[in-house]
Length: 269
Image (cartoon, rainbow, N blue to C red; front, top):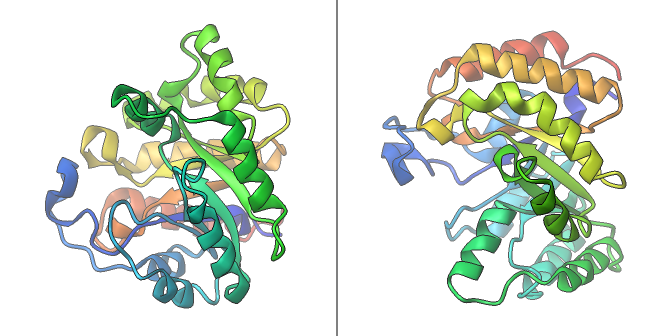
């Protein structure tokens, strides 16, 4: 296996963040699709996350035909099992669908509680995992998105939250604000203690959404070097690059990531 084979893309509908959508500071206009993003970045796996856009899932799945793995976002599947069934049904025709991911899990769970809606039920999460992992088609892995600022602050909070982490096959650790990137090694050590029986990946932002500006090439390179080290050590299994929606805008961080992949992507691991 080559190092690039451990990389995923965090895919969004093309143009999702054009013209400063959601106030993230990107006033440019991108046209790059998720599949084009994978081809451009030299990777063969993608998570597809519609982020509120009503997409034609079949069309995207057809475009992903040559990818080795595809995962779809499914937050809320504990309360809406039909989301799980949709992914399983699609996996019958598209054999590269192998994953489901709960995006922004802790953020959305807190939002539900504040709105007085039923909180996430960890027992239901176990049921979702059982259905995804043991359906008649193939095993579909269940992943959670977790940000570095959401754990490692108060041990008692981590302990209380761990019951929601345990049902997942794996955790993807993301750092939201680039200025906090130096905390990543410390946070990862905490994450390892919280996930002794789970798989782990890293998320890497190629645009600094947390501070509504471009990411720096220096920080992206440092992160990728650290993530490579942990993959080679067997402490993590991959990296998720975010995202296709700005990859064609001549942003420095994307160019640095491409240079890094050209240098390291074909390393045998």
